[in-house]
Image 1 (tube, helix red, strand yellow):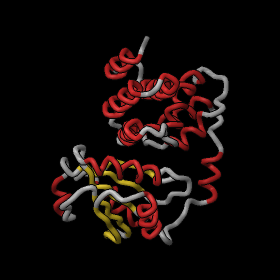
Image 2: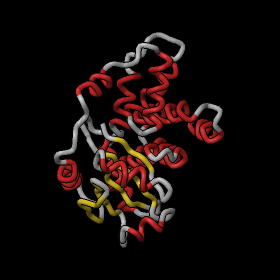
Image 3: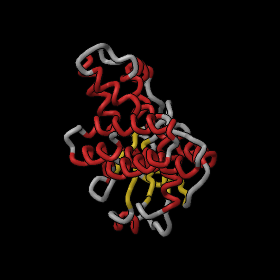
Image 4: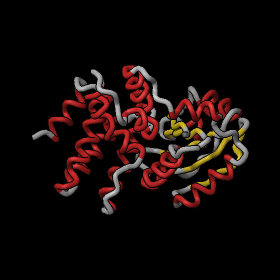
Length: 251
C-alpha cells in the first residue's frame, strides 16, 4: 500500500529527495483553484492506495510553495514529477486518463523493492488489543489510507471502542472505494471530498460531502451521511466544525 503525504518547502528535502533514495516518490504539483488538478489528484491517490503500490505520493501546493515550483520549472499544473535516487526520472503535465497515469507509475516504479513478506503478514494480522486496533485505524484514516483502516475496523470485537469503530468504518470504505453514483456532478463532489480527506483538509471534505448529500437522491443520502459521521468521529464530536456540519445534516 502506498503512502500519501503533504510536502512543502520545509520538508521537501527530507520527504522527497532523501526518501526517494529508498522508494520512488511521485510529486503532484497542484493548486486549489486548478480544475484539472481536481481531476488528476483522485486518480493518483486511488492508485497510491492500491494493494501492492510501492511509491510515495507527495502533494505540493504550488501557491504556498512557489520557491519549489520555480526550482522545478513548474509552468503549468497539474504537473507530476517522479523522483528516484534524489533526481527526477520521469514527468508529465496536465490531467491524464487513468490508464496513462498507471503506465507512468509502472515505468517509474519498475525495479523498486516491494513490501517484504513479513510486512505484508503484519498488515494481515490486526492487533489483538482493541484499543490499539482502533488507534491504528484512526492513524491510517488520518493518512488517507482507507483500505488498511477498513481491514482493522471490519468485524471489530465487542468492546468499548466498537461503537466508534462502527462509525469510522463507512469513512474507511469511502476512502478505499469512493462512492460512485453514475451522476457526473455528484461523483466529482465525492472524489473532491476523498482527495481533501487525504490532505487532512476536513473543511473542504465536509463541504463537498454536504453538497453531495444535498444533491443525492433520497436512497443515497444515508450512505453519504454515514461517511460524514465517520469524519465527525475522526475529528472529534466536540470539534466546532464537526458540530456545525452535523447540525446541517441532522433532522
